[in-house]
Image 1 (cartoon, rainbow, N blue to C red):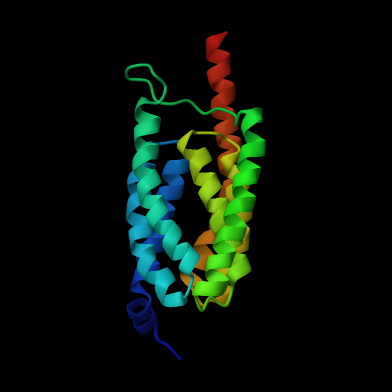
Image 2 (image 1 turned 180 degrees about the vertical axis):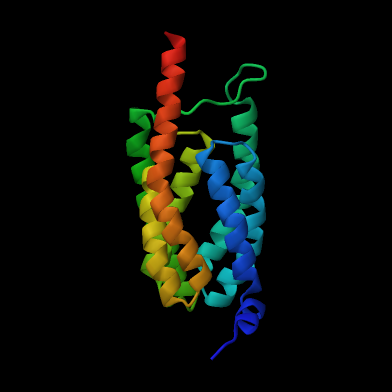
Length: 201
């Protein structure tokens, strides 16, 4: 049986990634633009964790995370079109939901095809599902759309089981916490929207 020191030594990257992930979550709930810095650091760490575990879609999406984190920071900082005013929390435009759904379906089957035919992945469906929703959620987050929390709740809950199955226990605990905090994050962002609307009156 592993000692605590042995566990920390063998899972140092998982634990470091978990710590950065917690910092990221706190910043996201606060709608702080600095969450995007954590959003660059965590996927760089996770690249090694996911590749070792054979979660190839998660490995690939971390490259995407780094790119969209740079875009997200710029969008939040300057996307409002007003000097010195950050992008406000808003609802996802109704006309974009069909497009997001179509993109999700196309992404799922494309990622699943790649995993089933070009990798030795043992969880192609689950990996494709969480990866697809994560891609869509990150696009929504980069625009500060509140419904992104709905997608993260589903992704986080599904990821708990996936990471337990793949023996990434530190991340399983992190995502269990993420699942709970996704609910809190949604209501906190909704309160921000209510406050913003009240100040306009």
